[in-house]
Length: 172
Image 1 (tube, rainbow, N blue to C red):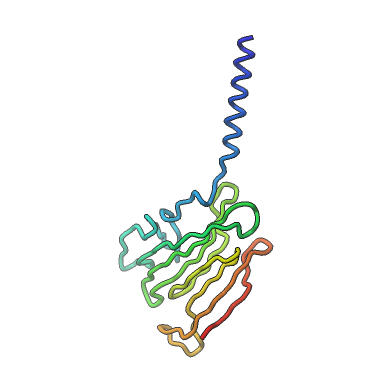
Image 2: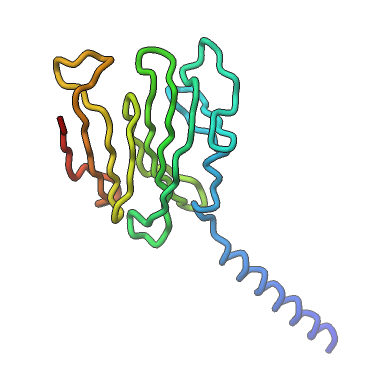
């Protein structure tokens, strides 16, 4: 009788442990992007507290990095929250700077990139009603590389498994 009671208690305890394990799922909100490693032009960009962690040398492509504000939304309506943010990079050479726009999610317990767009010489990303809006410098045909004369705004939405361009506007 005591063995039966003990086995029942162990069985109930195992059910509770399994139920707790199943309810703890990886969430993108738990990822510390400020202490994350990104790859840019085959170079590791390791952040610490949202900024470039290592000392840079002449051979480094990335001279500085700063993580922007993180926006959370369920872009693809799968019931899982996604994270959107911009990583501003200082670049060695004529490009000078780059804005790396990302959206990440958690799939099968792993961090997965859903979206990545680069914009030379910076740019801004906003999230409005599950739409990504990127504003960045735009070079017209006769513009010198140093001096873009226009600005381009692009909108992206989610459809059929990926982000697709909705609209592109070039402003004077």
